[in-house]
Length: 260
Figure: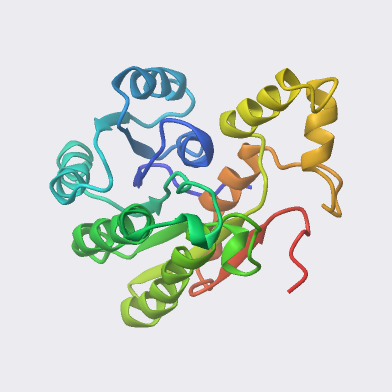
């Protein structure tokens, strides 16, 4: 299916690796100009090189920290200047530290809020005037934990839910010019999960990487973890006019894991 994204411009937050990178790659493959960002200069440069030539569009890499307000402003300004506008915003962020409620302090809560919520608030505020010029889209990458809590992830379980409330509100306020949706990923085989599995193998918890991956697949009706590209393709679809009647939706991409 041609998503007809050729010539459009997209900004993807936290996209030097993981699900953010997979989303940027899917958009680039569809012909969009794509701006990516990350804090680590070397990883960001590697991601830019990996995306170069994936599609017919241009790739812009912007070193930025999405928890810093000035960085977010610059992060929007640079692709607008380079590409001549902005059509799509994809928000993403790494997960906050794991742990139970009694092991978290005020600083942990504030840091999680800045990372997961204020990054979306600031990026949307800066991007909206450009998105609304000719119609645009916003997709928030969150987590299945906004719908069903995950043990040991009190910060993610609690704070990410604010993004869904924000998305639902914006979908009504921004309509019909800008569509706003969210995706709720379950476990995907990103470099982070690969690292966690390899560490488990090193500790002797599993005999092989394949055994560790199978453990992550436990309880998933499709009996496997996701490929990041599958999440990226869903994000690209939601950005496209093929999804022109979808807004305010929170869509699980989790192999059927959610029961609610």
